[in-house]
Structures are given as structure tokens and as C-alpha cells.
Image (cartoon, rainbow, N blue to C red; front, side):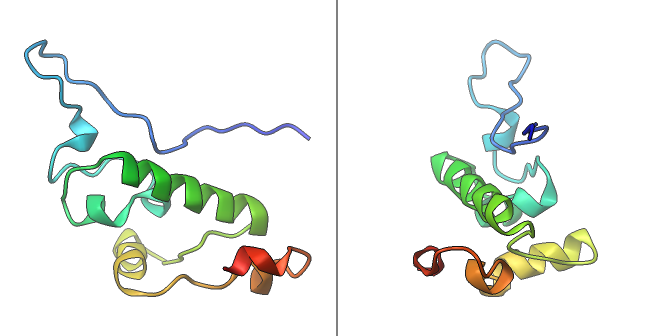
Length: 105
């Protein structure tokens, strides 16, 4: 099996202006990334930091383990609503029963 990660969601686009060391992705009101992996604080327009990266890693691991995303929505707005306002879609073992139940915690 070959694993190819095309969009991990933690990369940041750097400004061209040398006087600014803040990346576009970490500025308030800039949402960059694949919608299913965008952290809640980014959806709310807050500054992204290391916690957004941890969120992305959690979402990627959930998807890798279960084969399904943690949150679902038919549109970007429905997906954002699910991420911001709904509990996690399902426990990992309810999606993939062969996983250890310790992952549900």
C-alpha cells in the first residue's frame, strides 16, 4: 500500500512582504485549507496557532482509522456548522468495529 498525503492542512502560506512575519493562514478572518480539516477557531475567524495543527492531525487520524471523516456536510456551510455546533459524528469503533475500543476515549 502507498500512502500519499496531498493536503495535510497544516501548511501556511507566507507573506511576500518581508516586513511581515505572520503567515496569511494565522491572521484573523483568513480561512485556508480543506474545509473538512479546518479547525473551529479558523472557521470563527480567529488566529490559527499550534492548536489548529493538533486539530488537523486528530481529524486526519480519525479518517485514516475509520475511512470516514469525523464531521460531514453536503455543503461547506453545513460542514462548518457540524464542526462548530455538533459533537463528534461517531465514535471510531462505531464506524470501524475492528478498532480497539480504547480509541473511543
